[in-house]
Length: 159
Image (cartoon, rainbow, N blue to C red):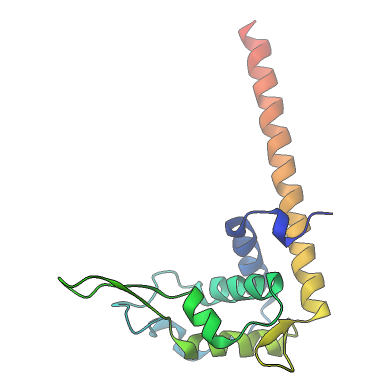
């Protein structure tokens, strides 16, 4: 049975974000349409569903590691701070956004607080992520099989 580690991060995050949006359980703050994701950013995200994508990325990151704190997540989602004609440096993302994402995931039972600091994935959350990963792997396998069938039909038509 394929797990979260076995499929690409991009495919999994896209699938889990759409699952979170469809389920409607994730509590999205009212300020998501106006907030920047870091002090080094100039604009808010263009994607209206960025909160779901960030939640899926955070859930995947915590799934792959044991205990992850807010500081580690700010470093992970940080980026390049462009400082004009001076050299660019790394800047951390907003800790408030990361904290609110973790709190939203805690409310739906995907994450829980760890004893030694940080957040960890719950058993229900792990089951949920594994189920999504299996569905994504099956969809990829079906797409590959369809591509192979199309190639075989093209080869038969050429002969």
